[in-house]
Length: 153
Length: 90
Image (cartoon, rainbow over all chains, first blue to last red; front, side, top):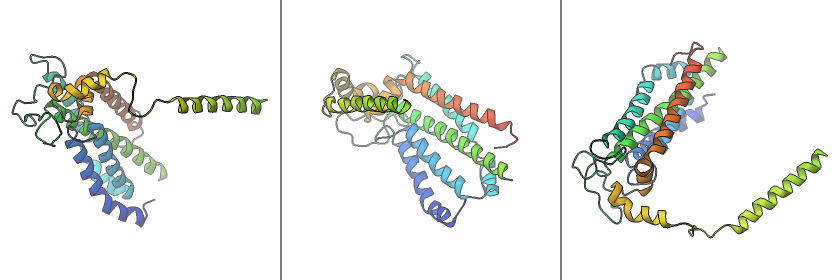
């Protein structure tokens, strides 16, 4: 299955896809996209990496990848960021916005100038959800690939 | 008999789709626009995000996103639990 075409294309495209996915996750509160979309893009890049390599190398590469831990951290972090709003307000209240904390810069009103340091909890939720989606989709693809390869032997 | 039934259903469905396509409202003119206008006017002050779609997904309808994340988590956990027993170690 791993032809030279796939290997060469992967070598060129995989870094670009991964960087683009991380960009979509990080800029979720400014530009179109967000955690789910960016996580899916990163997972597709990782799927390309999985498909383009030999069975043994994939096992080596992903043996120590903390995919289930990332998934759990993403889910708990998303819930925890939502629970932060209970400190004085309601569930999912944006308490970090305009507070001066990381991602807590003052939100400009009007036309979007694209300041990364704004957004409050929305930026954190995007990061957590992106982490969760990329770990979940990648682990599903990985386990299907491994079962397929074990079955071929 | 089955073919005749199939043709009738096909024609009815085609008629339905064509009617829907011709009766569709012009682009950008929805029936109810109060909520759209509210989001556009107030999202930046209330939810502090310049991306209004993100502010709706993670702030106004946070519960919906929480359910979505739970669905994905459950699906991944189910797949991994069902397939891990076949001797494959990830």
